[in-house]
Image (cartoon, rainbow, N blue to C red; front, side, top):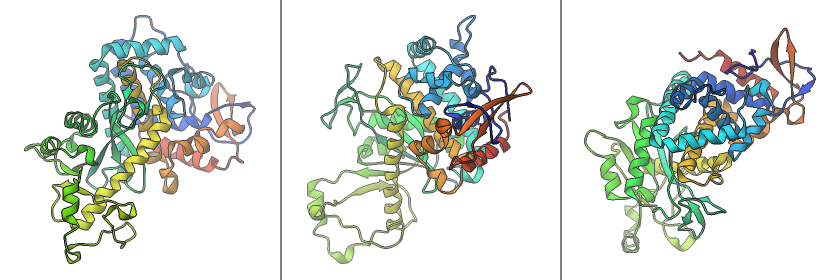
Length: 430
């Protein structure tokens, strides 16, 4: 596989031994190829056409996607596109830092119009990825599970809307939504609502808005109906939010955590032991204690799912804890802090983070198997994307064509090459 280093498509690869010039982050070609096979490069380029300046050298879609790739590779600010700029043979021509900053400012100034364009491009690419992923897609079982959860993002300087949080820290409190890939995979973000640090955990309006954004990211057939399950912790446990989920014509399935008051707790303790049903763990068996005596507590959830044993419903609800893994991955992928000052700028940054997480979820879904499909971002970067850090990949020119050559001694070269072959075998979008 090969291409000119000056084209829209960054260089593709051929796996061999040998070579001379060392290339850093050469494994990042997996993300480049994923973006191409997803149609994300074309979709974002088209979506951002209204913001391309006359006589502009760089396509705004390519500029934004370069920031996305930098974040996916471990960057945490716009200037980290410099790592891509150093390797044009892999990532193509990369805009200067001032050009990147101007684009972010321009998109931030456009407000909802730019956000809508970016999100529409993501939704189109997501539908294509799920279609070609077939049995590896998160809807392969006929249902899509969306988990909502808040995340605290600390701020170490005065930024717009950075305030004291309920944990006595200082920063922002975005509300996120992730599609769960189940125990065999990871998950992908489908919504990110940037909020001040003092935003409430039980704000029904924010949960409704985040769910609307999440549903708009799903293929049309999953935007209403029982085949889409919305899960939240007790932060979503409000009458208003549950009523919205169950509204006639929407018919979404839900599993929503509910807050247990002290009065309820005391009443439950009076229920005789014969009235209880044992909880079920993934491995089968085990009993769930519910008193605070051993550091555990009574929990409850509301659901409109019928015909399933309560133990199975309780297990289904508890697996929403995988959302914590998704939040950990987000913090490791550009959400450790919000690098810009204005809220509008940081909302664009939050979209960049989500697209980076999309690529980090789609690449394993399309190209990895077994345990490797569950690798989180840090492990993907260490084992695959940074393969050239120890001279594991080199670039050579042959007959005016550029090729990447990965060293055979790199422990995960086989994983990289097999993943590239799977990506190459996928149909091109359009």
